Image (cartoon, rainbow, N blue to C red; front, side, top):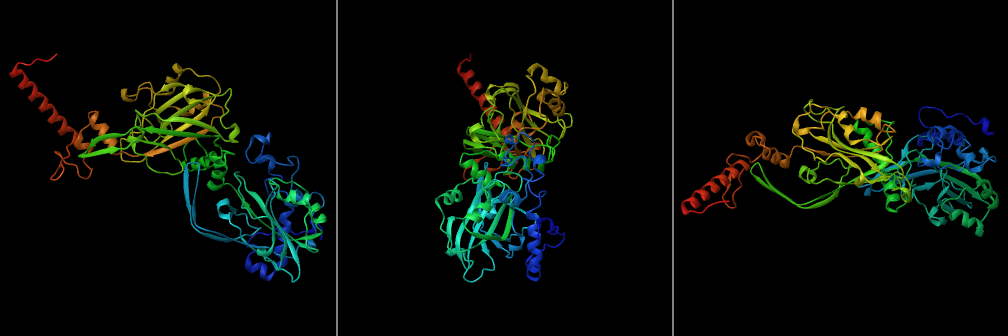
Length: 539
């Protein structure tokens, strides 16, 4: 049967589901072949120019050995020779068991439950590298006395993920493993294709040095028709594949090996879920990691009848972790350090020659519409004209102000990085905030981010992002009282608060700030009075 005569894939229940391929195995195999020659299904086919605009070398995951050719799976590996559909008579049954475990990457840790699944080449399901890291169970209807070759191959990147020869009885455990199974480790966003090719051998295969080198080379683009001919293989007699795209495991692995920074892909996915006006889904694609590091000294303070002590700590914010940050650890007196790391090979990740950037920190959850709204937020920090990715050399418009939520809702504080389209003037930045801001937030309230970006940034989407979440906590209550707030109102709903503070019969009293201030004042006046009686003066 010619490729042009192969039937089109059908919608509905998969022809290769276990039930369907048992009752009608031929239909399953024909549908596999139909998809294998379809040039519209995979990224290296007709979708390539849409997914990877010129120059494709500037886009991660777009490296293509044949950028000018729209390929199918078959044409990419067998060129114009193709394969004989009449030889494809065996279904390769592939079953994965992904053990439970924990993996880390990009400043976060994930815990995954055990997962079992069967690969179906007619499915569009995309798996993650963590799920397919372990060698699967691979079986087929092996004929007695036959030897087989199985090749696991990354079609998009031309990488061997397993080469097994001289397999007897369909049992991989007795095969000669030229390349042991290694799971897909793509760091790209788009789904890549990982194929399993089964061949019948004419007899025992002894690899030449040339073929052993080709098969064990990490990146090996060659015509599989040559392999078939030189090793005297028949087939392929079976074909299957799975789709996989990047996850924290694969991206973290590339980062740990100091090869590639693609953490912004994970950050982009997280940012889309935030559903904020400045980062529209599918339009915003972060191009840099915005690494925020706090080096916070120890802190001790009383708040609502309780004494608190925070230890000194150094930490990086983790936008993927979605945890609350103590306001005292990110207080205004402790501005963080910021590093910008490009989304590229690590050898080029710190190269920003000739560029200028703006860093801003904003709160869109302000309860007072005279201070900030969801579209005109409160400005917590702004640095412009950051040269060559070095934040310390930028010009400060507004100094860092730490989170201080006044209400009982969770606030998210976004750090955003924009690439400027020109050099900016610090004195001109006042036009983007409300001139009638309350004195406590002068130069910060109702920041018109949309107008600033429209006039000053290119592209108009953030190139880097990070964020922390915080709530009104003991440190914020302490600062509000210190700034003249009514202690009884501020502490009214705090467990254990009373005025005066309750006395611990063992450890003594833990006093409220107001009570302590009153006692201190009384003590000072008493000392002054006694000293005057004694004739002691003050200067």
